[in-house]
Image (cartoon, rainbow over all chains, first blue to last red; front, side, top):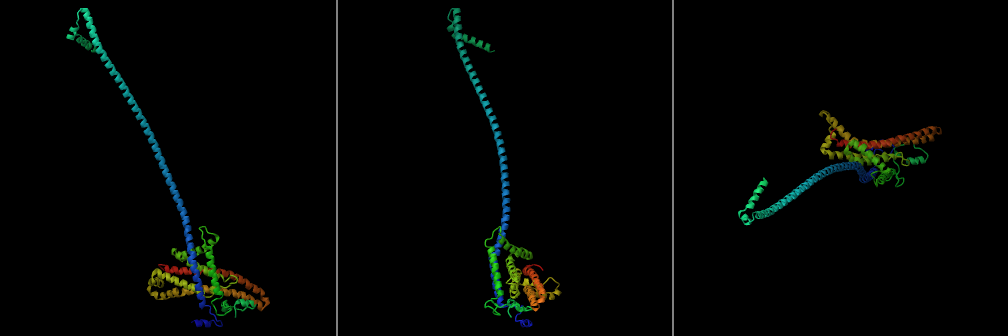
Length: 180
Length: 265
């Protein structure tokens, strides 16, 4: 077949459709070197660069989204804190108001108690005074009355009076009359 | 007979150009015939490999998130093949083939471009050896991917048996086998080779034709000028073919891998 083709080539020694084996060797080696270098050192790095570029763009978008989300979250947090602070302040005001009222009531109660105590002490003191005076008066009045009666009757009724309790009886009758 | 450079230097155009114009004498040893280890073709291959390696290593030595102009340029080549060929043809799985397709695309584009770059002025891909290597790699790659994805038996069943009535299968299976496992690598290699070969041949015809007419008769000089203007126009056409063939080679390779990975027909 090859002979036939070569023969048909006529006067020419060369047949362009028959490859020259030396060129096949050279071409194979050269193309293998080219493939090795480009496919190992160049195009994978381009693929990496493309990927890095995609990552950079997507990463930028993601970072922006994350920052946005964080800002929103912070805003929510601040709002919540603000609302909480407002509630707290209101509560503190209410508490203070309630405390003030309580303190006022306390002071009032104490004052009322104190005044009651003072009044009571005064009353007690008065009563005691009165009792003392009454006792003294009773003794004095008895003595005076007996003295007076002795002077009038001319004899000493002191023993008699003591014996019979006349004066006391009289005074008790007088007291009960006055109390009525 | 020596190459076209010698011909032009001699001021005597060998017209019409022949297949022999594609077989240049060796550089080392200088001028030797049939010594293909170190010729303009292998030198151009090494230059293409070196230029691509240096370009990509230099532009991607220190990649930044915000790219520099050069880095952006390198990235947009990769991004073009990755998104507009790999991912478009294969889907999200295509990303892992993008490095190979980009290497393939850049290599084919640059070696094709030598066809119209001054002082190169011929593409290494006009020797079928180089397109054949690339086609074989694509062939092995798509079969390997398919077998690894589906398993050996299922892959061939999947590749050979189209969803058709049973009575048509005896006709379809040989066609499918022929087209998938024989025609594909061959067409891939020949398409690129023939485009580059024909492009160079066309440029030779119009360039040398101009000289041939001028040498034959001074009165034909205006037609020689027309011929050279045609050369310029065809160079622009060649630029289109260069980019298109690099793209087509890559897209077809991607399409074969997509077919190997596909669950259904």
